[in-house]
Length: 300
Ligand SMILES: C[S@@+](CC[C@H](N)C(=O)[O-])C[C@H]1O[C@@H](n2cnc3c(N)ncnc32)[C@H](O)[C@@H]1O
Ligand SMILES: [Zn+2]
Image 1 (cartoon, helix red, strand yellow):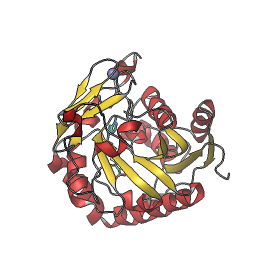
Image 2 (cartoon, helix red, strand yellow):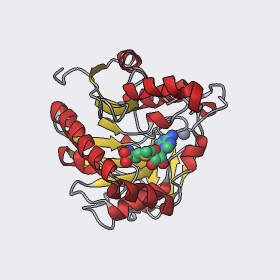
Image 3 (cartoon, protein in one colour):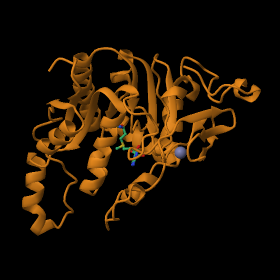
Image 4 (cartoon, rainbow, N blue to C red):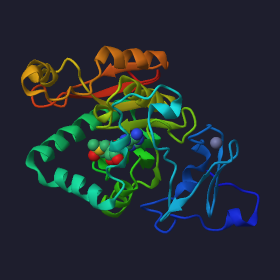
């Protein structure tokens, strides 16, 4: 894979190439990139990334290309809802906040045991789809789950809307597989259609307050994935959600941000793919499901 070519400055070292085992730099995936605004090809230059279509420019921060478009449904031409996930997009921009989130997972017993189960579910799905050249992890957070699938790929793209998460993950998480890092919005993934083998997207859907956001997120994962998507969603029919609905008149807790398995399957079908499994993280303690969506050629 080649970065932009043709001029002497394009041959200068690209940011992020210092430690090839840990960070291959964006040059390694340059030919997979597409402008998050107009989807035209992107050219990687030492001083930043440039769109060949709309001329947008995307700078680097400490070697990480900033390809995230902030905002929600207004950015893809749908009416703005009162409740949207814009504030959540800002939550982990600072590396200190990212550290708090990731250390809580490392330290709290319940979270540690749910992470173990998450590793098992991911490993089970990955075993079914086989080896990959490139897997996109979006949102990667601080790289909590990367080790569950990185061994099955030649390269992992770690992406999150929050720069703080990426800086934290790049410093703290370790896998042997080469990785490239970028900020990216799950609503505007800066990659070409079907450019990666598959995508892993854990614990984002249930933070998205509107159906428009949840469905856009899944549609984008399906657009960029050639063979599979592993995505968590909060099951509308889970015991946890049922109980919450029953308690609602009394405790006035806001409703969970859910999807039904049927709707996930329907969106998969609309993109030429199939939902083949969606095991729950736990039948009682959690409403999350780990969906495995595949395109044909992967055994059902
Ligand atoms: C609960 S964390 C999950 C991270 C990781 N998958 C894990 O399980 O540890 C959710 C992440 O989504 C990121 N995020 C929020 N909105 C996003 C968006 N629109 N696009 C991409 N990432 C987003 C946040 O910055 C945060 O790191
Ligand atoms: Zn563009």
